Image (cartoon, rainbow, N blue to C red; front, side, top):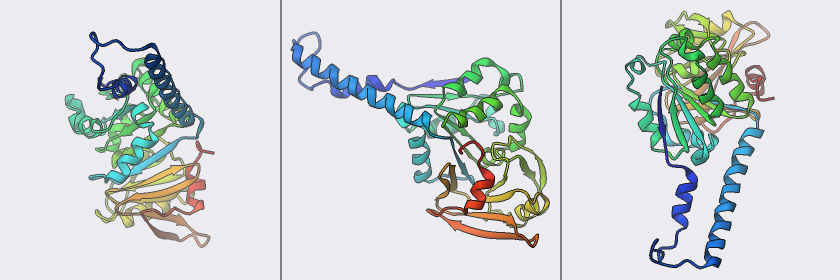
Length: 298
């Protein structure tokens, strides 16, 4: 396990409140000035606490992305919903084979550009790691979890039905956010597309979204037929195809498209035919999609 700790927010706040005329150890600070500054710090601390409480009182959110470089609009939204500078971010890089080498720099550098109270990396090199209490505790303390791209089958093999997997489900129930891109999105399906071009190989995923099949790199890799076939084989579920540099934010208010591309929605109609619809950034998916996807946000 690799962990990065950023400076505590309260320390940063305190530094910004010190008057420029003060020189510690030489100047005398009046009692009134000290009292006012202490009151201000207490108020800021209460603001931070209330923001974190508000986060815990709402139902959870998923931000699922289609891979490649994510635009600032998506990254900023994840940071905001993850409690920002007051939040604890946990990165799960296990989908990428690179993570087995202990090199987590591609992900810590990206997220390290944003102010968090703490950034931690949770990598499971085997299933025993995914059952260790210290890793479960990381999820317990997290306000936001980010699952990187790579190979979704690696995530299944190392996390499926482990203590960390179960804690991720509770994380959403606590009203917090999980984000993922590429394989990190695909694994949230119950019936997960593991591989295949037009005829998908479907395996069991984490089941965070039990009513949806997620596909990624969608129009860029021409995966229309692949997802359509998957939905035809599982007509009780809907299909969500996410373009690169695009995301879909799913919460108790619906499913909204973010980013530069489109999200494609598939469902089987009353005539047993698969229907497709395309939604651009800023639009919402139909309520029928949301009703099938959501279980933890009601």
